[in-house]
Length: 216
Image (cartoon, rainbow, N blue to C red):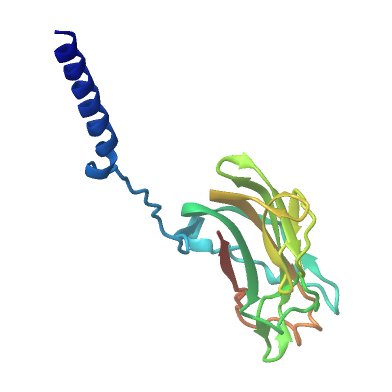
């Protein structure tokens, strides 16, 4: 009896050891996959402002034009501009004066108002950018001809500058919705600079192009 019991016990232990030892050789180990997907592309952005960006100063009396080279500065007109993007981005822009060469005073922040009396110059205007905000939160602004920038509550547009929204000095601010006020201030040249008196109705003919650039 003892021998039979001993042999059955040894057989059971040997069978269990055999099965346990054989398990890794016959059972496949589980596996799983991890995937990383997405896309990188240029954000889609829309620019909007009142009256399609037209600053209409209406009818201006010719009596405001001073003789000689004296100038007359008109009251500023302000419009809020909004750039809405469908993805988080940095946003900046450069400026092209579409009436280049017609400013009566040649400075980087002065933009032309067109010609009068053939080669005479009507004057110039400046554009101040202020009240910056990104995603509804107040933002500094920058204007720089190089790669460095100094953050400021307001800046002036210029044909030699890169402009945009800043988190601080040398740091752009990222977001989806960018807003700012652009204040336009025209200055009328004197009659000599205009090439003589105004004998017919003349229209202010200022035009800028803002070229926006995105950064991921």
